[in-house]
Amino acid sequence: MAVFNLTPSDPSIFILMGIPGLEAAQVWISIPYTMFYIIGLLENLMLLFFVSKEQTLHKPMYLLLCMLGLTEIATSTSFVPKALCIFWFNLKTITVRGCLTQLFFLPMFTVMHSTILMTMAFDRYVAICNPLRYATILTNARVALLGLLGLIKTILFVLPLPLLLTRLPFCANRIIPHTHCEPVAVAKISCEDITVNSIYGLVILFLVTGLDLTLIALSYGLIIKAVLRISSNEAHQKALNTCTAHICVMLMYYAPGLFVNLTHCFRQGITPHVQILFSDLHLLIAPMLNPIIYGVKTRAS
Image (cartoon, rainbow, N blue to C red):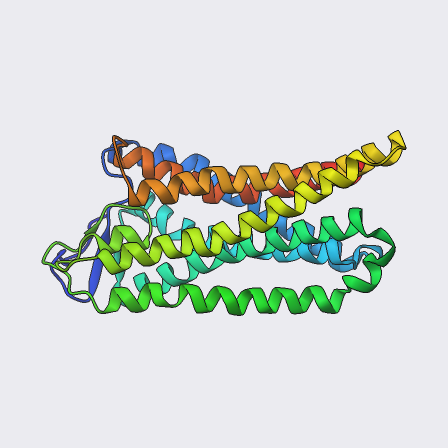
């Protein structure tokens, strides 16, 4: 389908190219995109349904899992429908307002995802290192408050991203080589210097995500120290089973996430289509695998 009569120079729109260099294969690429998105959506909706219906699951750990599930649904839904429109119907245009909306919400959901993982690490720390006080330290109300504070923190840090982009003038070439409005990709088509944008992107990466990751590492360091002191083999195994799912999910999220963000800022020898595919799959695979990992380990523990 044609992009109608709109041209890349139209000041009211941007053009999303999808995956440059793989245009001929985009219909085939859309198959795993669609499968991962639908599977992840159904799994997380089922998680939310079962936790809401089962009274015995109305506990802080499962409340955090529901927050994570909502965040993962929102993350993939923020970009997959538009990406599929590009792959299937060649609908590459996106309004400037729509682009700014997308590049606010998608980073917001990914940063919120990191905040929830950090809170989950704290939850496991209290459960294993201070089990007798767990019920008084982490109540459902306190977990909900932590989630609200995390959301406020996320909005405050992410809001400058679209605001910094609105100050930039864009050249006649308004073509974005990506499947969605990614902040660095949008900034690079500007006619002005984007040093401030790049620096702020690194601030979010190292100050916000880096701090979350540091606190997670500290929590699990203390957990491992406490587990090694447990004399009972059964209790030792139960503690390890409880933490294994969280560690797997965090490694699966942070390792590719840091790689994607760093390659956006310091792209060296990485072809654009590989970078875009890696970026998209990082946002698609985690929502599909996380409910499975947590489901299996919850049963095992």
